Amino acid sequence: MTAEIRELDELADILALADLFAEIWGRTGEPPVGSDTLRALAHSGNYVAGAFIEGRLIGGLVGWLGGTPPHELHMHSHILGVLPGNETRGLGFELKQHQRRWCLDRGVNVVEWTTDPLVRRNAYFNLAKLGAEAPEYLVNFYGEMRDGINAGEESDRLLIRWRLDSARADAAAAGRLAELDVEKLRSWGSAAIVSVGVEGEPVEAASEARVLICQVPDDIVAVRRADPALARRWRLAVRTALGGALRRGYAISGATRSGWYVLESGSE
Image: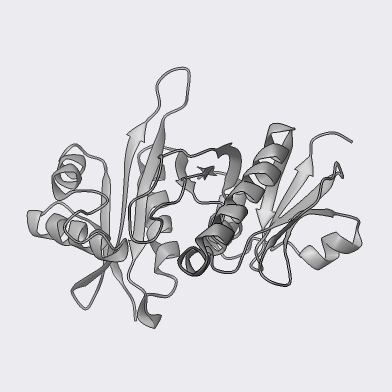
Protein backbone atom coordinates (compact mmCIF):
# COMPACT_ATOMS: atom_id res chain seq x y z
CA MET A 1 0.00 0.00 0.00
CA THR A 2 1.51 3.34 -1.10
CA ALA A 3 1.77 6.14 1.42
CA GLU A 4 1.29 9.81 0.63
CA ILE A 5 4.11 11.91 2.14
CA ARG A 6 3.66 15.66 2.31
CA GLU A 7 4.58 18.72 4.31
CA LEU A 8 2.15 19.64 7.09
CA ASP A 9 0.94 23.18 7.66
CA GLU A 10 -2.71 22.86 8.67
CA LEU A 11 -3.34 23.01 12.42
CA ALA A 12 -5.37 19.80 12.44
CA ASP A 13 -2.48 17.87 10.87
CA ILE A 14 0.02 19.43 13.28
CA LEU A 15 -2.10 18.41 16.29
CA ALA A 16 -2.44 14.90 14.88
CA LEU A 17 1.34 14.64 14.42
CA ALA A 18 2.02 15.65 18.05
CA ASP A 19 -0.47 12.99 19.21
CA LEU A 20 1.15 10.41 16.93
CA PHE A 21 4.61 11.07 18.37
CA ALA A 22 3.18 10.85 21.92
CA GLU A 23 1.67 7.44 21.09
CA ILE A 24 4.85 6.09 19.52
CA TRP A 25 7.09 7.26 22.39
CA GLY A 26 4.68 6.25 25.15
CA ARG A 27 4.21 9.80 26.41
CA THR A 28 0.45 10.35 26.35
CA GLY A 29 -0.31 13.98 27.16
CA GLU A 30 3.38 14.92 26.91
CA PRO A 31 4.56 14.47 23.30
CA PRO A 32 8.31 14.56 22.63
CA VAL A 33 7.64 17.60 20.41
CA GLY A 34 4.61 19.73 21.25
CA SER A 35 2.08 20.95 18.70
CA ASP A 36 3.02 24.59 19.38
CA THR A 37 6.65 23.90 18.47
CA LEU A 38 5.63 21.91 15.40
CA ARG A 39 3.35 24.73 14.32
CA ALA A 40 6.12 27.31 14.71
CA LEU A 41 8.61 25.17 12.79
CA ALA A 42 6.22 24.63 9.90
CA HIS A 43 5.21 28.31 9.80
CA SER A 44 8.85 29.45 9.69
CA GLY A 45 9.68 27.29 6.67
CA ASN A 46 11.29 24.30 8.33
CA TYR A 47 10.63 20.65 7.58
CA VAL A 48 7.50 19.10 9.11
CA ALA A 49 6.18 16.16 7.11
CA GLY A 50 3.64 13.40 7.58
CA ALA A 51 2.93 10.09 5.90
CA PHE A 52 -0.68 9.05 5.26
CA ILE A 53 -2.26 5.77 4.22
CA GLU A 54 -5.88 6.09 3.10
CA GLY A 55 -6.05 9.47 4.82
CA ARG A 56 -4.73 8.23 8.17
CA LEU A 57 -1.55 9.76 9.58
CA ILE A 58 0.84 6.92 10.37
CA GLY A 59 4.29 8.52 10.36
CA GLY A 60 6.11 11.82 10.60
CA LEU A 61 9.51 13.46 10.31
CA VAL A 62 10.62 16.85 11.63
CA GLY A 63 13.79 18.89 11.14
CA TRP A 64 15.04 22.45 11.09
CA LEU A 65 17.88 24.35 9.49
CA GLY A 66 21.01 25.15 11.45
CA GLY A 67 24.69 25.94 11.15
CA THR A 68 26.56 29.19 11.66
CA PRO A 69 29.80 30.24 9.96
CA PRO A 70 32.31 28.71 9.57
CA HIS A 71 30.13 25.57 9.72
CA GLU A 72 28.10 24.63 6.69
CA LEU A 73 24.35 25.07 6.50
CA HIS A 74 22.65 21.81 7.40
CA MET A 75 19.36 20.40 8.60
CA HIS A 76 19.07 18.98 12.09
CA SER A 77 16.63 16.08 11.72
CA HIS A 78 15.10 15.89 15.18
CA ILE A 79 12.47 13.16 15.22
CA LEU A 80 11.24 10.34 12.96
CA GLY A 81 8.36 8.14 14.05
CA VAL A 82 6.26 5.50 12.30
CA LEU A 83 3.48 3.38 13.77
CA PRO A 84 4.40 -0.33 13.78
CA GLY A 85 2.67 -2.61 11.29
CA ASN A 86 3.23 -4.43 8.03
CA GLU A 87 1.55 -1.67 6.06
CA THR A 88 4.21 0.81 7.24
CA ARG A 89 7.23 -1.36 6.40
CA GLY A 90 9.86 0.73 4.62
CA LEU A 91 8.10 3.99 5.42
CA GLY A 92 10.99 5.37 7.47
CA PHE A 93 13.21 5.06 4.41
CA GLU A 94 10.63 6.80 2.22
CA LEU A 95 10.27 9.65 4.73
CA LYS A 96 14.04 10.15 4.80
CA GLN A 97 14.21 10.19 0.99
CA HIS A 98 11.41 12.79 0.93
CA GLN A 99 13.47 14.85 3.39
CA ARG A 100 16.57 14.40 1.22
CA ARG A 101 14.80 15.70 -1.88
CA TRP A 102 13.35 18.63 0.11
CA CYS A 103 16.82 19.64 1.28
CA LEU A 104 18.55 19.23 -2.07
CA ASP A 105 15.87 21.36 -3.75
CA ARG A 106 16.80 24.15 -1.31
CA GLY A 107 20.57 23.83 -1.57
CA VAL A 108 21.00 22.01 1.75
CA ASN A 109 23.49 19.17 1.30
CA VAL A 110 23.92 17.84 4.85
CA VAL A 111 21.44 16.45 7.39
CA GLU A 112 22.49 15.56 10.93
CA TRP A 113 20.72 13.79 13.79
CA THR A 114 21.53 11.59 16.78
CA THR A 115 20.79 7.94 17.43
CA ASP A 116 21.23 5.53 20.34
CA PRO A 117 24.24 3.35 19.43
CA LEU A 118 22.64 0.38 21.24
CA VAL A 119 19.62 0.25 18.91
CA ARG A 120 20.69 -2.26 16.27
CA ARG A 121 18.01 -1.55 13.68
CA ASN A 122 18.71 2.19 13.73
CA ALA A 123 22.45 1.68 13.24
CA TYR A 124 21.79 -0.52 10.23
CA PHE A 125 19.16 1.86 8.85
CA ASN A 126 21.31 4.98 9.17
CA LEU A 127 24.64 3.60 7.99
CA ALA A 128 23.68 0.81 5.58
CA LYS A 129 20.28 1.81 4.21
CA LEU A 130 20.78 5.59 4.00
CA GLY A 131 24.55 5.71 3.46
CA ALA A 132 25.18 8.16 6.31
CA GLU A 133 28.27 8.50 8.53
CA ALA A 134 28.71 8.38 12.32
CA PRO A 135 31.69 10.61 13.14
CA GLU A 136 31.21 11.24 16.87
CA TYR A 137 30.13 9.48 20.09
CA LEU A 138 28.21 11.79 22.47
CA VAL A 139 28.04 10.72 26.13
CA ASN A 140 24.68 11.24 27.92
CA PHE A 141 23.76 13.86 25.32
CA TYR A 142 20.18 14.61 26.49
CA GLY A 143 20.60 13.61 30.14
CA GLU A 144 18.44 10.88 31.67
CA MET A 145 15.48 9.92 29.49
CA ARG A 146 11.84 9.91 30.64
CA ASP A 147 9.86 8.45 27.74
CA GLY A 148 8.30 4.99 27.72
CA ILE A 149 11.06 3.50 25.54
CA ASN A 150 14.19 4.87 27.23
CA ALA A 151 13.09 5.77 30.78
CA GLY A 152 15.88 5.77 33.35
CA GLU A 153 18.64 5.38 30.74
CA GLU A 154 21.55 7.71 30.13
CA SER A 155 21.27 9.11 26.64
CA ASP A 156 24.52 8.24 24.86
CA ARG A 157 24.18 9.03 21.17
CA LEU A 158 26.04 8.71 17.90
CA LEU A 159 26.07 11.82 15.76
CA ILE A 160 24.80 10.84 12.30
CA ARG A 161 25.89 12.96 9.34
CA TRP A 162 24.15 12.35 6.01
CA ARG A 163 25.89 13.93 3.03
CA LEU A 164 22.96 14.13 0.66
CA ASP A 165 24.95 14.75 -2.53
CA SER A 166 27.51 11.97 -1.89
CA ALA A 167 27.94 8.86 -4.02
CA ARG A 168 26.96 6.74 -0.97
CA ALA A 169 23.68 8.61 -0.52
CA ASP A 170 22.92 8.29 -4.24
CA ALA A 171 23.64 4.54 -4.19
CA ALA A 172 21.55 4.07 -1.03
CA ALA A 173 18.58 5.95 -2.52
CA ALA A 174 18.68 3.61 -5.52
CA GLY A 175 19.06 0.50 -3.32
CA ARG A 176 22.56 -0.16 -4.69
CA LEU A 177 24.72 0.35 -1.57
CA ALA A 178 26.70 -2.83 -0.88
CA GLU A 179 26.37 -4.27 2.62
CA LEU A 180 29.36 -5.24 4.74
CA ASP A 181 29.98 -8.96 5.31
CA VAL A 182 31.13 -9.35 8.91
CA GLU A 183 32.07 -13.02 8.45
CA LYS A 184 34.40 -12.07 5.62
CA LEU A 185 35.86 -9.34 7.82
CA ARG A 186 36.47 -11.92 10.56
CA SER A 187 38.34 -14.13 8.12
CA TRP A 188 40.52 -11.16 7.16
CA GLY A 189 41.65 -10.66 10.75
CA SER A 190 39.30 -8.07 12.23
CA ALA A 191 39.07 -8.00 16.03
CA ALA A 192 35.84 -7.98 18.07
CA ILE A 193 36.00 -5.36 20.84
CA VAL A 194 32.46 -6.13 22.05
CA SER A 195 30.31 -9.16 21.22
CA VAL A 196 27.13 -10.72 22.58
CA GLY A 197 27.88 -13.51 25.08
CA VAL A 198 26.00 -16.78 25.52
CA GLU A 199 23.70 -15.25 28.15
CA GLY A 200 23.23 -11.96 26.31
CA GLU A 201 25.99 -10.16 28.19
CA PRO A 202 28.60 -7.88 26.57
CA VAL A 203 31.96 -9.61 26.09
CA GLU A 204 34.71 -6.99 25.89
CA ALA A 205 38.23 -7.26 24.47
CA ALA A 206 40.94 -4.69 23.81
CA SER A 207 42.54 -4.48 20.38
CA GLU A 208 44.46 -2.09 18.17
CA ALA A 209 43.83 -4.06 14.95
CA ARG A 210 43.32 -2.05 11.78
CA VAL A 211 39.70 -3.25 11.55
CA LEU A 212 37.53 -3.55 14.66
CA ILE A 213 34.00 -4.89 14.97
CA CYS A 214 31.61 -4.06 17.81
CA GLN A 215 28.31 -5.89 18.33
CA VAL A 216 25.15 -4.65 20.07
CA PRO A 217 22.24 -6.78 21.35
CA ASP A 218 19.29 -7.77 19.21
CA ASP A 219 16.73 -5.67 21.14
CA ILE A 220 18.07 -3.30 23.79
CA VAL A 221 14.54 -2.04 24.58
CA ALA A 222 13.54 -5.56 25.64
CA VAL A 223 16.75 -5.86 27.67
CA ARG A 224 15.96 -2.61 29.51
CA ARG A 225 12.54 -3.90 30.49
CA ALA A 226 13.70 -7.38 31.55
CA ASP A 227 17.07 -6.62 33.13
CA PRO A 228 17.98 -2.92 33.67
CA ALA A 229 21.34 -3.88 35.21
CA LEU A 230 22.29 -5.80 32.06
CA ALA A 231 21.19 -2.84 29.91
CA ARG A 232 23.48 -0.62 32.00
CA ARG A 233 26.38 -3.03 31.38
CA TRP A 234 25.74 -2.74 27.66
CA ARG A 235 25.68 1.05 27.84
CA LEU A 236 29.04 1.20 29.56
CA ALA A 237 30.65 -1.49 27.39
CA VAL A 238 29.69 0.20 24.12
CA ARG A 239 30.57 3.64 25.49
CA THR A 240 34.07 2.39 26.33
CA ALA A 241 34.64 0.32 23.18
CA LEU A 242 32.91 2.25 20.41
CA GLY A 243 33.35 5.71 21.87
CA GLY A 244 36.94 4.94 22.83
CA ALA A 245 37.80 3.69 19.34
CA LEU A 246 36.43 6.86 17.75
CA ARG A 247 38.48 8.99 20.13
CA ARG A 248 41.60 7.01 19.15
CA GLY A 249 41.11 7.88 15.48
CA TYR A 250 39.08 4.94 14.18
CA ALA A 251 36.18 5.70 11.84
CA ILE A 252 32.91 3.77 11.57
CA SER A 253 32.73 2.44 8.03
CA GLY A 254 29.34 0.77 8.34
CA ALA A 255 26.97 -1.47 10.27
CA THR A 256 25.50 -4.88 9.51
CA ARG A 257 22.00 -6.21 9.86
CA SER A 258 23.28 -8.65 12.50
CA GLY A 259 24.29 -5.82 14.82
CA TRP A 260 27.99 -5.25 14.14
CA TYR A 261 29.61 -1.87 13.78
CA VAL A 262 32.70 -1.95 11.59
CA LEU A 263 35.53 0.48 12.38
CA GLU A 264 38.73 1.11 10.46
CA SER A 265 41.91 2.82 11.58
CA GLY A 266 43.16 5.77 9.61
CA SER A 267 46.74 4.60 10.02
CA GLU A 268 48.46 1.82 8.09
